[in-house]
Amino acid sequence: MKTSWHILKWYWKTSKSFRLQSCLNATLDILRVGLDFTFIAATKMAIDTAMGGRGGSLSLAAALLIGIVLSQVTLSFSKRWIAALLGVKAQNRMQHRIFTLLMKGQWDVSEHRHSGDVLNRLERDVNDVTNVITETVPAFLAVIVRLIGAFFYLYSMDSRLAFIVLIITPCFVLLSRFYIKKMRVITRTIRQTDSAIQSLLTESIQHILVLKTLERTHAMADRLEQRQGELRQQVRQRTLFSSVSGTFLNLGFHAGYLVTFLWGVNRLQDGSITYGMMLAFIQLVGQIQGPFREMMRFTPAIVNSLTAAERLIELEETPLEQQGDPVRLQAPIGIRLNDVCYAYNDKGRQVLSHLTYTFPPGSTTAILGETGAGKTTLIRLILALLNPQHGSVQLFTEAGKDVQASPLTRCNMVYVPQGNSLFSGTIRDNLLLGNPDATEEEMRSALQCACADFVFQKEEGLNTLCGEHGIGMSEGQAQRIAIARALLRKGSIVLLDESTSALDQDTEKKLLDNLSARQDGQQTVLFITHRPAIVEHCTQTLHLERHTTLASS
Image (cartoon, rainbow, N blue to C red; front, side, top):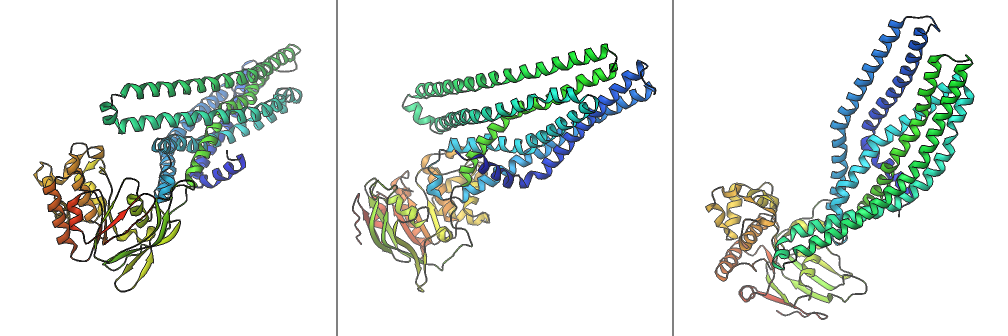
């Protein structure tokens, strides 16, 4: 758990983009406090004038009260307007910043977080943090101003009563310290359970076909009910703790109000104060006690935001990939593996052990091996999604230029992963992810090369909608569109990870022929495959085995 000081420093840094909105809200809240005190003074003046206790115009007092009420309504409207227009902007800005950091983060670190948990943090935690910065902190400042102003106002009329009412302050401070510490622990547990529920929902919806075919939909519903029961129990615990703490504080508030009332009645009876002062006493006690009540209302929001900030800090601490200008090499490009070792954890086996191999510029290689032999890991190392723990991965050109594989050399790569990797949207949207500047002719050419001519037989053509994960298309059709999308990139190293697994033999042969014609000696192609037709099509093969690594040509 992060220290409060660490979180406060993070808040100060994060609030930089939201300070204008916070200042506007604080200004409006403090103006509202000033209007409330003015209303008390005007009320006292109106009552004393009506009772004949002082001279003055009752009409003037009434006009002043009407003006104050109208000003309060205007301030409330302005506050809502600022919250509506700037509040969403602040939340979107923070969400965008953290999302961008995640997109730039190291893949092997980000991959270990569950998508449901990350979504929960990007939505609920970002909302809690921005609300505290833009709403709660300004309101808290106004509460402090109200407390100080009400105390001195009451002190100017009766100093002893002011100190009697303020005596609850030490009790409040002591209770708050204990309350916040306990609530942070409870709230973090609730957030973890909430993230687990969102993770379960995300996975179940994504894999509903698997659950249906396994006839395990009821099991996931039961698991959800169990998690929800845990959440209810945790919320019940937080509510009980909050209610008990609030009850003790409310007893203090009621005692303070009762003391003020009896004090005022006694002084009213002996004629030392007017009816207007009596009413002012009662109102000012409310102005003093009100801030403490508000602080109790703020406390859950502050505790939630502390937990939310801690969870967002964890996301922001994701190490970034190497940043800088892309390093584009002259085609054709070769790949050289020098004594490469990689294991996914310190105690696990080495997936790749002292692998040395060269993929010559313009070559076509089939990478073979049993499951777990490290085929996909090898591709990830070439893409610099992973870094070798020993040895190196280098790209080299025929002109003799060598560079270390890094995120900056990824611009030279064309990659088609396993499985369905289409996004929801149109076929055109998916293709433009490969090259945002692609022309209609380039998209048509890429689709033809990928044997995806079926797109032009659809009524909407390139504007045909794809559902999430390519719903509405066969696995083979989605695979071919994904290949066309990759071909629109300008990279000269093509990495295909079981990318023809859903194609029939005739379509696969045609695709391979098209790729050969397109290659023209300028592209280096790596196939991860088990298909004999692809092996026959390649100029060399790399055999990987579990625990040991062999290379053959």
